[in-house]
Image (cartoon, rainbow, N blue to C red):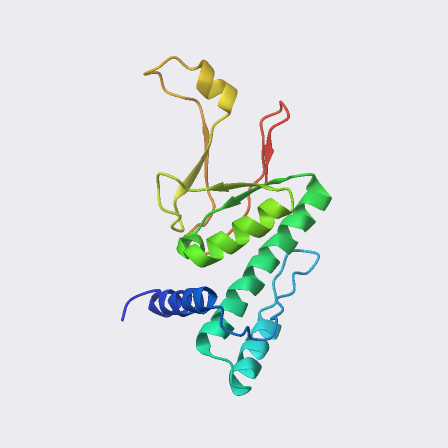
Amino acid sequence: TYEGQAAVELEALSEQARRRSEPPAPTLFLPVSDDLVIDPAPLVRGCVAAMLEGATAGAVGLAFHQALAVAILDAARQVRRHHGVDVVGLTGGVFQNALLSDLAQASLKRDGFTVLVHETVPANDGEPVYLIRKDVLEATPSGDEVPCHTFALAPEMNHYYAQYDDGDGGVVL
């Protein structure tokens, strides 16, 4: 066995269920509170109930992934409503899960969010995030160091969120 094996296997079963258009498990619910705390208890109860009712592991896994994507969208909507931010960065090891990443990106984009994802480095926890303004990048002569701000999204003990305001209208939360 290896770290993440259960998650990888659940993703594979879920993706197979999606491709085969298996009868879906009941819709699962993952509530997001006003302070952005996600309570997993209803999701776990829903998964167990669906399995006891005879749903396949793939169908339950797909419903699980869909519930996570909805929770991500709900949290992003709350941040947009309270802070006016409509750019979402999907980062951290959880977004190495291609199914979750695809579902989250699709729902966020349908809702009008700009979605940022990793392109050249893996989405592992602990990777630094570099914020570089496009106009600064374009104005920096080739070969010169590009000024940027760096912060970590997943310190060793706990995840945290940072807000960056460049003072010129660019805000990332």
